[in-house]
Image (cartoon, one colour):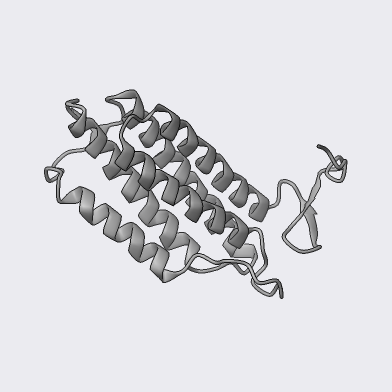
Length: 177
């Protein structure tokens, strides 16, 4: 399917407003889409049902975050928004992982198993997404819950990578500078 509506470098936000495809808001929700796609790669590689289920839950949250960031706050359309309960959910998920991980005393290098390494890559894309949202929020009104959501999500992904390596018997590669 194609519409040709974007052939001149513009796209529509949710609603009717047209914006440049390289606008800060479009860059932000494009990064959310990239992160969601990368998590799909991780799920396709993972043999752990718990990891896959938690990442599918996050994918659903990312669809909400994408719709949220693609819709102006003043828009009259009812769209789901990221809320404090989503942030709290990520905190609980992270706390659950931390209960089963040794306390981190050093920086670690991304890597380990292929699944863990791709989770670390997802974490890096998540951090970029957070930066893109910050840039967009400086020029446009955005849901203020988006930034803490992505901040918590990157922490979750970091710890999920550590947990994955621990579960698969891979040791953490300590960085020494």
